[in-house]
Length: 548
Image 1 (cartoon, one colour):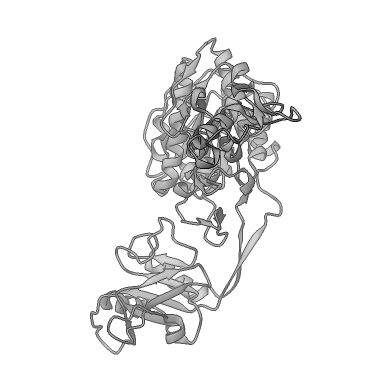
Image 2: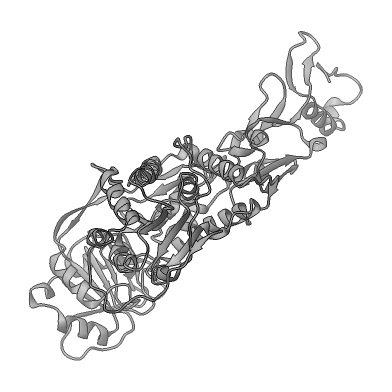
């Protein structure tokens, strides 16, 4: 792979510029083509995203030890002190006359404007009941904000809810918390970042547990199971996008913008770049919150590096990265900063591991898609030759686009892999049935969330389409005979992968009176064997009412 290496390190004296200003300073052919392409391509932003609203009157709980609380209160403006409730969590005594409440067993749930804080009631020895601290301290049902000064944190979500300032964990400063306590009064709107379709969900079917990728991926702990269905609390969700990227069935999709919008934007952007005379484009995805850091890094990158702003870095996944390579990008770079949450990073690394494995089997350098620290961008070797340039946008769901992009890349690389191993847990693979013991009860078909497994239709049987299988394991769990097994893999034979094949089929048992088929013969034989020794069926008194 031909590469271009950027030399040098980030300068500490680089003049601070906005990203747009930085782009305007690079006037070489590629830099001008990039600027015009970005100016001429419709923005990714939704015009009217759905929102959720928060109401806050500024009632603030401050929790920590007495010394921490005293220091915080001393720095607070007098105007907000009467809106503070002070909760000491370790029994220590404060200097001065601070009105402290005491509790070590503290539970905090909720979000901006609706934090429920409970503490032990302690009405008698052994009493396990709890009381609402907001009701006790302020005659309210909830607190509007929480300032948590404790080192370990009372609320342990990696990404605390809006209105929760985890100062002790280093996720917010005292200055930010004081500013919020002073100014967070009124009604506030937040975008609703996701769309959820439980009919596509592979988490629970017929009471069986399956995929948990979205729950594991959320740093805000916004996902839970309610009434046997995945639920996303829009007030806790902060739009990291990792749940949508991790979801293999598109039951969860990012809505700011929608996935198709992002894919079309990348296609149009690269098309406009080439039309303006640009060569060898590198697509660089970055999170909106990291734009200032990217502006500094961009000063030491060639003009062919095209930045694509995302609401969050994990809001797009492997299918968009591979589409970008298919549309002519020489390389896809994901720029991360130390602020990226660990759960989000895990999702990106899992996606990248799959892409690396698949591209590697075609002979394509794995660095064609890479996750890089923002500070290391200037020294990153950049690919200088495109693998191919598709003339049309890829269509279908995320699985269809990913597979189409892989097929096109493999063809361009003139590689002919057959089957690729994929990392454990990857949502691609085969389902097999031990047909000798299968009774065709169709439990597997009933629970399959993607219709990868379906009934034959005109006779007892099960069919399978590999491209649709997400390896959720529901079919395996549902099988009463334990004859189903999963094989994680990627099948490069597009025809075989997309063709529905028969896994098991047999003749039906027929009624001896009317000849109508009514059940799989193997199931009837299984029932006969189970009933053979029963007293009601002894002595030859009962004729079997069917042919098998």
